[in-house]
Length: 113
Length: 114
Image (tube, rainbow over the protein chains, first blue to last red):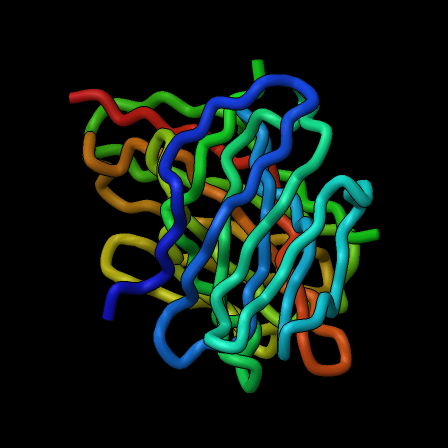
C-alpha cells in the first residue's frame, strides 16, 4: 500500500499564475481533505471532497478550488497566486465510515515569487 | 470557532529528560484528539489518537492524556532521545453529520540534544 501520494514535491510559481496540485488517496479511502501549512503555523483546513463534491470548506477565498475524480484522487487549484500562498499543501485521505482516521501525504511545497 | 493552542512553542532539552507538551482547545464538543509528529518540510505522522470518551493513550515512550471538560491534553515523552527532535502538533476532530475536519495548533518545536 503506497499510502497517500502527492505531486509535485516542490513547485515555484510567479505571482498571478495558476497552479494545480495532485493527491492520490490511500487504498480504500474515498474522502480527501486539503490543508495549507504556512511556515511556522499549524495546518489550516481548505476543503474536503467526497463523492466528487466539495462537502466542507474552510475560510479560504474562491481562488482556491478543487476537484475529485471517480477514482477518488483529487486536485487543488489556486488561481491568481499571491506571495502569501507560499506554503506546504497537505492532502489527507480517510474512509467515510471513519472520517476521523485521516492519513496525510508528504505534501507539496509551493513557493510563490 | 474551535481554537487550538500549544504551549510551549519551542523546547530544547538534553537527552534522557522526561518532558510534557501541552495542548488546549476552546470547544469541548470534539470527537477525538490526535498528536502528530512533523519532521522539517515533511508530512504528518500520527502518534496517538484519543477518542473523546477516553482519558489517555500510550504508545511506547509516549503517553497522551485528555481532559475534555477542561479542554486540555498533554503529551508526555519519557526518556527523550535526539531522534525525538521534531515539531509536535495537536489536532482536534470536529464531526459534522457524516464527515469532519481537523483543527490544528501551531505546534511545539522540540530539540533534544545529546
